[in-house]
Image (tube, rainbow, N blue to C red):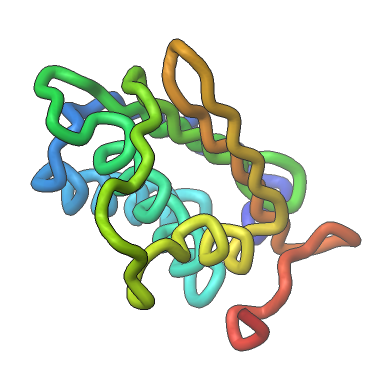
Length: 146
């Protein structure tokens, strides 16, 4: 990470209502936080896209047709990268429509952009845990390889 030897910014911790209209503000906050971490370029875009996809999935799959839910995005710096957790308090809802060739690739996208992605679902909601390493042996593949 570019900020070696400097104090890392405080973790980003956002809780927002499970409404798609909230995603733009979440992206802005994450983009600002990444800039404070001195993470830019393709690394920042990879994290932004993966986090946006995880948040959108939490809204769509965890809270579809149910008002009052929330989503939490937590981002923190780790050695040589960042750690993000996206969680919701909804219930996983399977897709009810016919398969669509233009949808259903969110998890694959996140896995291609981040070094590690783990998804856990349960009665209390879903948690997507992601790591992006920008240097060292766990460094993610270049975006062009996705």
